[in-house]
Length: 224
Image 1 (cartoon, one colour):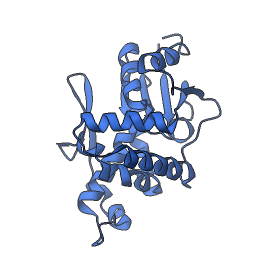
Image 2: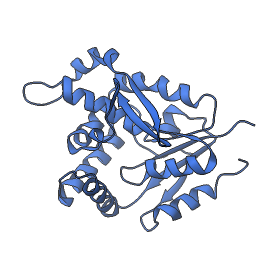
Image 3: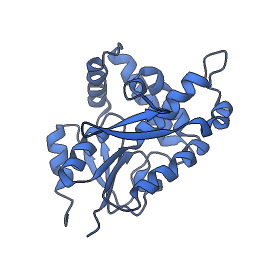
């Protein structure tokens, strides 16, 4: 029996990735953090394709896409992102990457570059992907679709806590400003904007912890 394909989209810091990982473990699925792929391209752009003013040279990035090899490796039952053989799982969570990832993700060339990677992994079923356009663009025929949201204040609290644990210095005001900026950029971009698929189940987890959110999602998934 073919295992399902599950798409989980939603706003930043709603717990998409960590929740998807746990659901994957519970259901025996493979989890792919598609947001990490875009962060990986952004990290590459930050390190090799910047203008003298420190801004990313978008055209330069396009010309170097063929030099990017992103892959997930299973290490201690966790998929870790590698760029050209280097573990970049910590580097992609920095503020420098966060402040540029929406710009990079809005580029059609980048989305096309990563599209086939995502679809090829999902083709045989048994996967759960999270991101911003999985249910609307990448996998419109997914068996189950969910869209996660939460208040900006709650997401700020979660994101600040995550960065603190990672040892990344910042403040809550900066984190909130970044989230608001990314919400606007992701929702208004011309290419594959962040939005709820018409057939996706809306999950507002402002007042739900991770376990409650997972249980609510699992309550909608049957026949596995």
